[in-house]
Image (cartoon, rainbow, N blue to C red; front, side, top):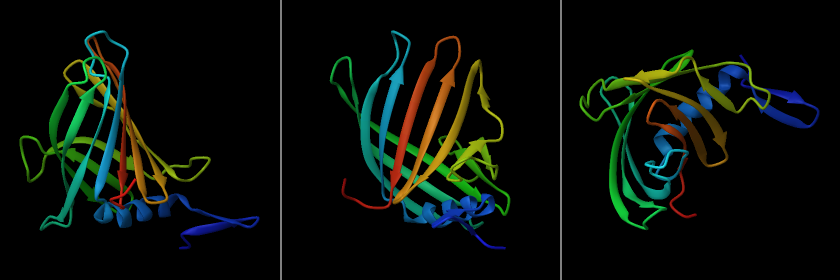
Length: 172
């Protein structure tokens, strides 16, 4: 199966190859930047940046250990952050889990499946993740040196947009 198709003079990834490209990029990620925009008064609007340490689990999953600092827009306070994610790559999907409490399997958040997108560089979550009364939805866009993960979180106390930019290069 070809991973690209020719449209005029431009080659674009096919649906299946978007998953393959993401699977190739995951182990190369080294840094991230975060932008949070909250529509609630008690939200945590701000920006952050940090490093990503990547390792391969014994079952083949790709583990991200994220560390950095986040600056609250309202006060300028800088807060340290840590996060642990697990990406499980399958032929027809990539499953994202959060590993705050269980570092082996984690809490399954989203499943990105191959689907037709106009630009063929975008993956959408197959279904949102419910955490209590909050709903987490996301889309993932491939970019030249990594990918962007756009989160939309809604609930009684949350109305937030988060953008996580994952990059393979250490420089901006």
